Image (cartoon, rainbow, N blue to C red; front, side, top):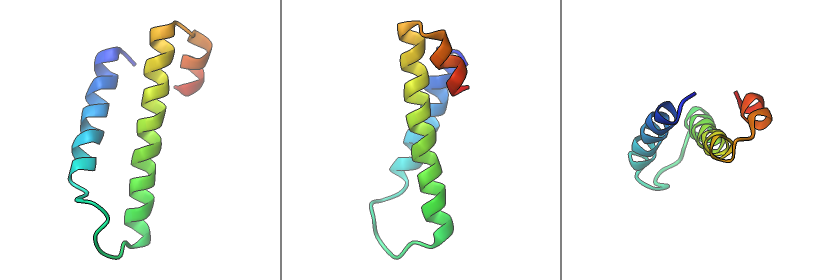
Length: 64
């Protein structure tokens, strides 16, 4: 992935997280799992972006 693609995906995640409107209401299992996957994806994209900046290709290939 290029830096532009990573930024684009992170922008989608940020938009999704803004729509969550806090922790109101009881959550069903599906929404909990969906939010968890979005947060995991965000963390992976952060690590991928950092490995690209540092130039660590082994870590970059591991994360892809």
